[in-house]
Length: 86
Image 1 (spheres, rainbow, N blue to C red):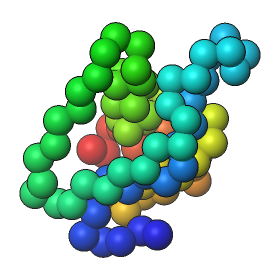
Image 2: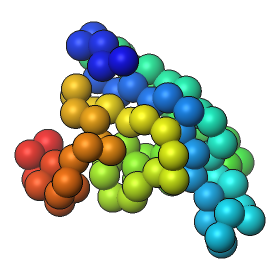
Image 3: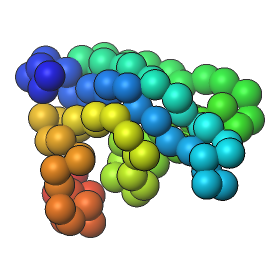
């Protein structure tokens, strides 16, 4: 993991709500290379906002790996510090 060409790298990402009853994201994989443009599309409730909140360190995943600019968000102790540096 942690490919330097990938600005965002996500592996087996999972996020649920209501004590696991609602699965917003279930095993997502994504790589975004530096300079690449992507769009995130889907119907209401499909996990778009949840995904963006986790990438922006506004929320945490239930399970899985998220790296942004080479920083593993699972290992970042203070997410507010991470947000301020970006």
